[in-house]
Image (cartoon, rainbow, N blue to C red; front, side, top):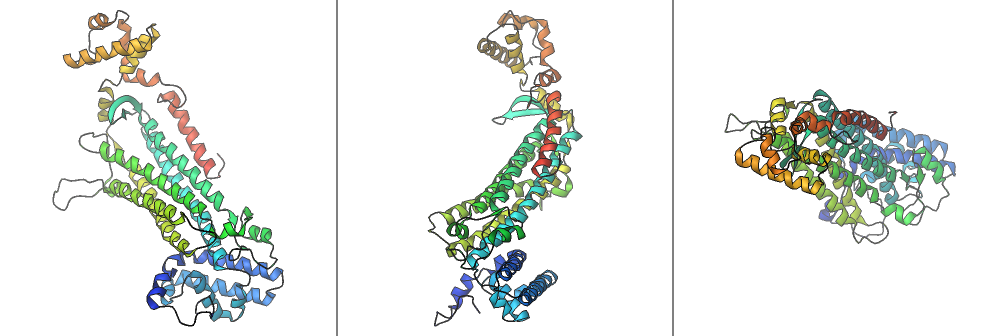
Length: 464
């Protein structure tokens, strides 16, 4: 039986009914639909629409539905209701009779589904935050295991300047912290009760919506019923947060795929996240990172699909919005799975310290420090830049490095150069020079890691 009455003289076309049904997808909202229905029953009882006996029967019936659904997942497959709301009402009526039909008084599926998805986002957003925090802490542990490892930093995928490995790990922690913040913002925007908006104009029954909001642990309730039943901004916010998380994970994946290749040789991935070739017995393929990198495209697609879905929808509710849930569920599942996989990848990373250091020392990565040396001697930076460019060109032509070029050849380019320049060119000196907050010097990186730990805990709402 449908929930929309006897106006239609003919039953729905079978193909249309199958096309229209969302139960295969939105059954995932069952726990939230049951929770909302319990709260609505109490709200109706407070204004005399339901009796105490009705509420007791409804409560027992809803609990029975939830218990059986948890114990027998296949039970839901035995029913072909239009959606999760129809399923709950039908099963409740089977259990308790007409009290189930009184429960829908003053309520619409429009504000029901708006409530359900808000409850879901509030709940699953917390799961995303915990998964992001676990991943971020794993990055910090990776840095802590290798506090003194130096590797090359890149711009344009060319060696630029040496950095500490913990500084590199912290860059991805910063991204995760922004993702944590974005998920938190989506949860906050979802934390407003739409129930009581009915179909679009507000319920005709004087339920206490503020009390109803408190009973469902919402921070507030909506102030406009038209907007409340059609608003999906909070879903865009959550999918955007998932998409940005996926993009950040994809960037790390690209790094790790490169850095674990024979051409770089900085890292090695664990056997538990690598695969082999069906033909070439020597292969160790970084499939975990490639899959995460690929799945980030799904997140972009889901966000784009939701944005296009919402574009141009007239007020208030439209059936188009049924399409939001597949995008929502897929993005949440993909993001959670990707975070868990990348936590495992990072936990198993092995570092070739010598290869990292050799690469960090090459490519004239200390050239900027040579220019800074001249600046401290009174040479304007632009002139210092030109002098060092000439030095690099001479080293390149002679097959030398900045450390091995004789002082006489330095002085032929600029007579300010002196033998003490060589002290400024060591990797340790180059790193130590960058001790500003946010820099790569050990004196800056180690406090930054402590601050990052506290910021992750604060983002989770835990005491730092």
